[in-house]
Image 1: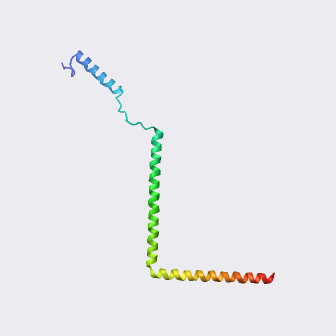
Image 2: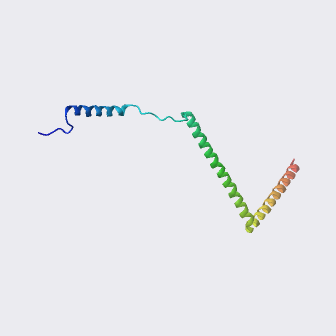
Length: 117
């Protein structure tokens, strides 16, 4: 005849009790580790919002500084470019002549309107 793997009746009862204890141990609440500083949901949200605002402000400042640097570089390149300087002078002269021409036309039209009335 074959022998039981566990042994006698008392051994089976003991192993059954141990198994039951182990099963019940799984359902017992574990001791929780409490955080030293408890942060509420509202506080966490406020902190995250502040972090996002700070990040956006830093990005905006960086973009502004980059735009200023780009503008300075463009102006410096323009100042160093002789051809661009000549073109600027020509454009200024054209603008002055156009303004003088418009002023003369307005003066002529005012004189003409005064004669008609």
